[in-house]
Length: 246
Ligand code: CA
Figure 1 (cartoon, helix red, strand yellow):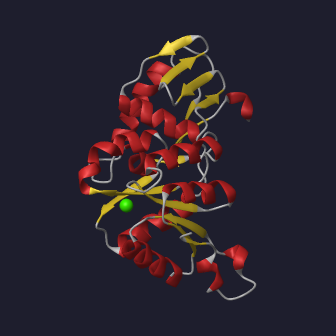
Figure 2 (tube, helix red, strand yellow):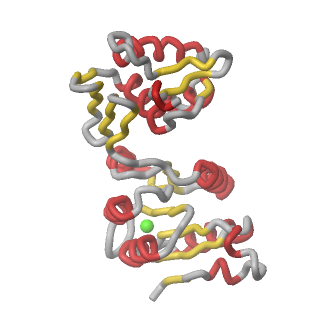
Figure 3 (cartoon, protein in one colour):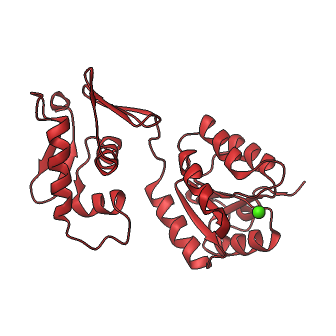
């Protein structure tokens, strides 16, 4: 069986295990697997490797991992299916997908089945490391399909938004902005954080585009209701919170 279970951890100094982040790498190409494992182990991550989809899924659902790095083209079970199964049992673990260039069309489907980021092969290790660190820093994510703040409800599967019984129609940007606010309900989000999450990284406009979109969103979500959910935090940004939540 081609599992290197706890192989990475074995190389670490004793007594410091719990401080280390554990990563599961599901990759059948041994060259890629070795290169990634060597790099991540040198960065002091504990790395387990599975060389086929079924083994990967078994490990992912048996042990706790802080991150799963998942190749899409895998023997025994394709990456997409591994991802779908992981999401039905563990909705929290971040998943970084590795894809070949000609699988671009699969990316949409991959994100819909719950990937957090992807990297196109071939990639430089430095790039993988940057993304790995970003996902580990962000940590587990609330992936509940239905999110509520007060009487406002957002269903991530159908992308429907309702306030009370009233259906609210949003553009895709408004939806993305509302989803980001609601996933982080009660937290203040700066304009820059919002730009980074809702617009892509190549965005180089002005952060006041956020104010414009928040205005649109408020006109649909808050204006005709007495309890205003979207709050302005002066000089910082925005937050969504139920009034009675304090
Ligand atoms: Ca492969």
